Length: 308
Image (cartoon, rainbow, N blue to C red; front, side, top):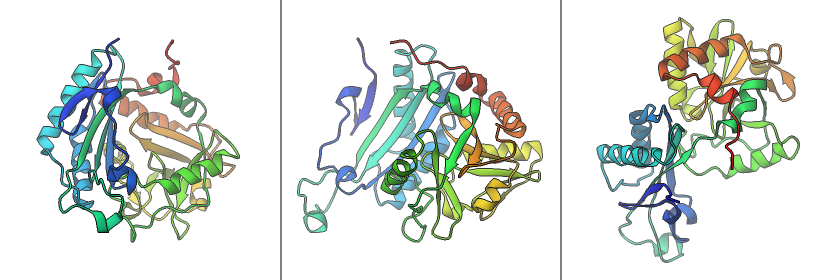
């Protein structure tokens, strides 16, 4: 059976051969940045936005991409074109991953070579919308774990990186109590930031409120939400949000690449609104579907696990 291809350090290889050595600095130090996009009707969605953010993350992390942004787009198009042939009718996710490179001497800064060659990876995977079906049907229960979000004074929130141990610990903490909940992280001052894979916004008194952008990774899906809000005449503002604001909101949502916009119906055990996915969420999602050219609600809410 033919397998998908991936891009690794300048070559297209079978996906099973797209692996990193144990001494890659992405593994040893977590020195890696990333990004992720999805397709609609097997065509990439907002790809230039994702790749531009990826390259900005590389620059901030002092990792020099071995190919140009334009070449990265060409690589992505080839991967999507070839791998879509193996999954007719399926949507694909495309991951970008760049590490600082390989260091054969495990000795920290004292053993670092003068020049490193970054490790560049792109790979795809089939989107499994049944995994998020319950989010659309019943809504999400978000809980704030004890670990706090990285403060921007330590690491810029503007880059998408793989330094997420605090999120892993937070997720294990809350899911030990309830496997169905989604952690959302507070900053050191008790303000809402984001989840491990999405932004977090509230809808109250006719306005959409997002945490301030200096405190979160400003998602591409959050940008799309902002654009749709402007089109619909809904004010979109940035402000500090606390738990009090969330539980007293009319609705709350999680903008994210895989399913675009999910409804949050409970927060730390308290219902938001009537505890059901709200009408404004569905109205915005329907408009998003028109833009993407596909029924996003149906794609997720009516999805089933693929047959083995």
